[in-house]
Length: 367
Length: 92
Image (cartoon, rainbow over all chains, first blue to last red; front, side, top):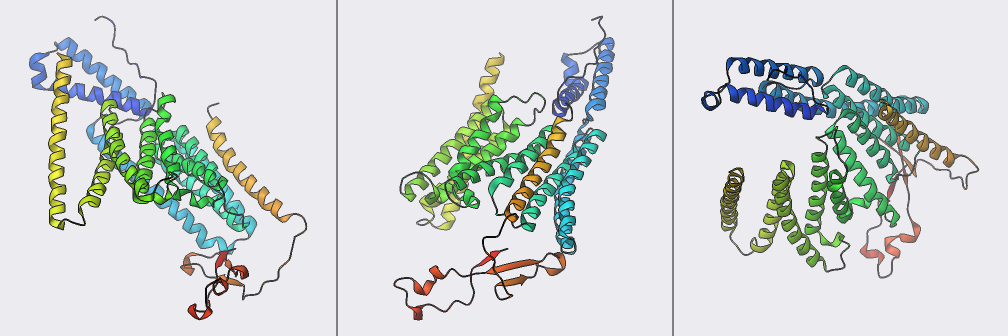
């Protein structure tokens, strides 16, 4: 009891610091409540020591990571994230439209200089913003505009010199987005980079098979395999300094995986499976139902909220698709929707039962 | 080493542009295999859309594949097909 409270700021990223601050804030609130004080009353010395420690800890975390130490600050930060993303998208459109508006008046060397220098200048601006601010709002905004400028850059160079369109440009765009994402801790950039890299691999394989590379989306099984691969990346690649990146891998991977299955369930002709189209569609429909249910289960077991939500969304879509095929043609429309409603109620009851069982098991484990 | 990924980002931009320009240069050196003089009939000027927002100049090569004319396919009678009013277009 005699040792002074340590004011140690944990190593790690801003997300870890934010979680630590949230835990301290909740602990402070709970200890101040009358209900807790009735069973756990700190003496004045302990009370002052805890207050001193928690305030110093929150201040240190806020000082080092510029995190939110109150619920109001968190709400404002959420609004800032939305404003930053919308601002970045608007600026991307502005860059493209501004260049389109004036590029006809410029000579080729000037056009070339502008499109090559723009992403480099924006990259430098991103670095400058990252050094000036500890929160990633302006950094994220500038990084997204830098990526858009780099995409515009290669598109314009290809257009000026009439270079045949190939899938190769997707590779530097994807790598560039991922490098920026890891350098500045930007989840949106990571998601974009993963989508670009998945598209590159799918397009490369499509081109190797002799098709035009832009047909890469017409073979959804490419994305099924790539989505699965991206989903598994966090299993063998730890992210000690970017603890909020594994959910991005899981989200992008699971979305690609389930969208591919949904696409194959709707149009089996694009599958590699050597079966009749109708059999392929039925196979992927049933597989989608089972795998989305498995995703919900895995998400619950591992405490991955994003996977639970993605799995639930696709489970409902696959279920509705199956029911539509079964009932839509021979059933009155009102009865079809009434049955869907009844099914929804049944699902709520089933989930409540599962939840009750989980609470019972957790209580038993605690006891 | 703290700036390694920043430098890598810049290198990606520079290398991607260098490769694209080298490809364009390689395509332009040497003796052309053939020369073709085109008129406005084959090489049509296309206005940007909407014109006030696009100052670029686009030329579109209008071409026809003589080995794949629809009325020359076996089993097709010319009276069943209208004469083509347009031709496939390709960006230039």
